[in-house]
Structures are given as structure tokens and as C-alpha cells.
Image (cartoon, rainbow, N blue to C red; front, side, top):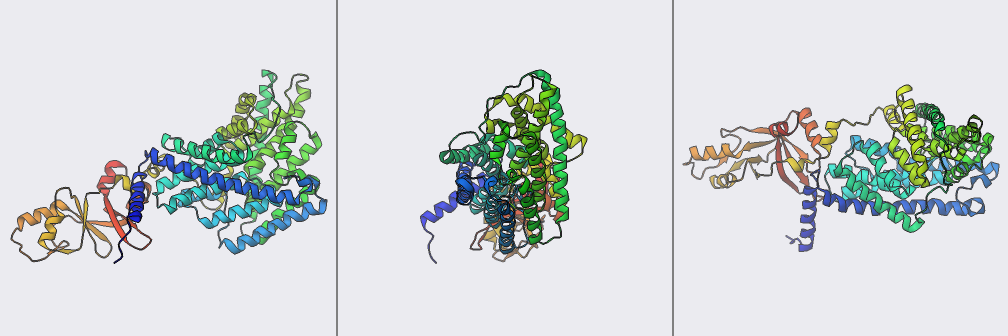
Length: 583
């Protein structure tokens, strides 16, 4: 038999120690190291993603300017989105194998139903599908794809290391924050989005690694793109407190706009449920192409358009056209499943609507009203906050994107008002939760379940065990009951059985003259518990589900190596679980 090399054994022992340590919710040192690695990897992926998009756009767009779709001839504006949509459909047809969901929705779905295990195939589909969509001028953004790419990169790291599911979930949140930070150059907004939208919780154990991941990824992005804000805007001043009621009106109106946007997205998604992918993507691309004839500014990410709105370089009529076209094109593209993001487009829609309201404010407050650009800035945050139901992430993103602290006071009022209008007055959930419900799913955020998901079964298992065959000799039996052993795991055909070591010790005491004859552990007087297997990487919520579903008295925690070798690490009895949690 080939002897295992010392280096290989050292690596395996180190990984096993890491897996056991990170099953604890407070393994901050290990999570800190992992989050930095995840952030750096995510930063590299996002930078390559941005370079791919911008590099191709430099080659195909007029004047070598990324985002300059306005310079294209009318015929090209129609053909380009249609051709891009068909190319993405072809790629998905070849690669998807029936699973076409990507983006933030995919991340939330995998967190809810698959313990944060994101497949590598979906990462590749998102990377190239989103790149093609944005390059071809679809009315979508890169932030949603960046979230998926970051989450999937971090999840893949955790899966390759065989880390427990509670750690993989944290790494997914780290990748989410890192993706936003590297894409937007907004590390704080990335952290808030990951906690507010994806994890739906604020804990020290998750906040610290998520922050480190966002900082690491943003550092990589800044090394390539610099530290400048995404939008270069004047230092707007809020002119007078008398405008606050009008700002509140802007928030209410933006809440209705967000409701219409989510409604159109939902209608598009329902209309495309039974359509083949070719048809859905073709329709989405055609809608964008036709609307781009009248408002080419809707094509692509649209940061150049947002910058023009913020400095009031676009007139009222054109602003209304861009607003209406962008809203319809984005809702249809997202609803019909094109693989790119909606966060950036909500900024553009909000900027347009805020700019419109700002222009209308001039006669209301003659000589006193703030610049329309200021209202556009406020509208950006209000639209994002109402659509995603993420007010703090929206406010932080707007502040970091523009480096303008003057937006905070009116922005807070508008964002909260818009969110309340959409959610409480109109009864509309966030766009992500709405789309998940359309697919027959929901985003679970029960506080008890969240608490159980933060802990791995390895952290609460009883490791004082011995593994034995069913028949043993008296000498083997005496070894099994040596001090420190609490449970004996009888390896037999499933269902597996465990028995208290004290029961075997009592039998040996009462039958000291057994001699050399064998002992059948399934025949001696003892309290035997029926058990099932659970993977070492599982979180405690999985143990709870298994106890309830299979009605077992105990669980044996085991791990299987790629070579097929199985090791049992410990046991978890139903009674011990009851003492810790409620079953």
C-alpha cells in the first residue's frame, strides 16, 4: 500500500481543522482570512468582467467610447440588441441544461434552498451572458451579474475546500458585498446590500468578514480603475427646508413608479413562463431595439446618461422619453430573463424621474428650488430603495457613487417615503421576492432558522464516540468502554444504530465470565437509538429538518472523501438537540 506523503497529510489535517473550526458561528479569525481570499478572487473576476465589456465596446461603438450607443445608426440600434439576445439564447441553450436563472435571484434561491452552493456552470453562463447582453445594448446593468459572480466565486472557494454550509453561506454574502464593491466602487454599499437584502440580518460574525471581502475586492478594482466616484457631479446644495414637503412628494411618486416597474416586470415574467428561451430573449431584445430608435440613451448600462442628467444637460421632453422607454425596456428584459442586472437601470429610471420632478419644482419654488440634478440624485436612491426594499443600501450607494454628503438628509426622507409607499400603501414586496414567488418559491428569513444556519453540526456534535462492528470480542468490547467514550456507533446496514457506552460497560460487569466468545452488540440489553447520517458540512437547520422529517433519535455526522473513504466524526442525539434548540 502506498504511503501517504507528509505534505499531503499536513494539508488534509489542516483542512479538517479548518472545517471543524468554521462550523462555529464565532470563528472570526478563520472567516477573516477566507473573506480576504474571497474578496481578492472576486475583485479579479469583476475587473476581468468589466475589461471584457469595455474592451469590446471600444472596438464596436463610435468614437471608441464605451456606452456611446447614441452614435450608432438607427438600423444598428435595432439589430444589435436582437442579435445579442439571440446569441445569449444560443449560449443558454447549449450550456443551461434547463436552468436559466442567473443573477441576484439565483443567489437568493441557492441560499434559501441549497445552503449557498452555487454551481460553476451558472457562473460561466452569467459571466458571458451578461457581457453579451450589456455589449449588445440591452437595457440592463452589470451590478446584478457582479453580485452573482462574486457570490459564486466565493461559494466555489468554500465548496472546493469542503467547508461547512454555515461558512459557505457567509462566503456567499462576502462575495455579494465584494461584487458590488468592485463593480460600483462602493464597498460600504456592498456590505449593507449583503446584510440588508441577501442575509437579512446584522450580526458581528457576518459583518466583519463581509466588510473585509468588500474592502479586498474594491482595492483590486481601484488598482485598475482608480478611486474616482462613478458619477462626476457638482457639489449640490439643498436650498431650503421648505422643499422637504416636495421631496416627500417625490418619494411618494417614486414609490408609485417602483410599483409600476415591479408590476410590468411581473407581467413580463408571467407572459414568458411557457415561451421557449429563443422567443423570450428575441422579444426582449426587439423591445429594446425599437425603443432605442426614439431614445438610444436607454441602451447599455447608461452611466453616461445618468451623468448628463445629474448636470442638467438633458431637456424635459427627452428626459420623459428616456424615463418611459428605460422603464419599459428594463422591466421586459428582466421579466423575460435576460442575464444582466436591474440595480443600475433603477438608478437611471430614478434619475430621470427625479430630474423631471426637479424641473417641475422650479416654478413651485421660484429662485429657491434646488438644482434638477439634486432631485435626480435623490430620485436615484428613492427608486433603488423602493424597488429592492433596501433603503439603507440605496442611501449608501448614492452617497458613495457621488461623494456628495448633501444628498443624505433629503435622500433619507425620499427613500423611506418611497419604500413605504410601495410596500405599505401599494402592498408590493421587493422585486426579487416578487420574482421568486412567481417561481413558486419564497425567501425564508425566519430568525430562528437564520440562527440555526449560522452554526454547523460539527460544532454541537458529541465527539466522544467509538465506531464498532456488530460483533466484537470481549477484549474489543473493553476497549470500546474505555473512559471518555459516551456512545458506540454500530456500523451495520442502514439505519445505523448507536448505544450508550455505559450499557455495554454494565453488561461486561455483569457477565465478567464471558470468556472468549463473541458479543453481539445488537443482542445485549441496552438502549439502542436509531440514527441516520448527516454530512459534516451541514448546518444545524439541516439537522432540525432531518429530525422532524425522518423521526430519528440520533444523527451520525460523517464525511466522505473524493476517494470514497468515509469517517464518522461524532453523534447528535435528539435529546441533546432539544436541550440546545426546540425541535
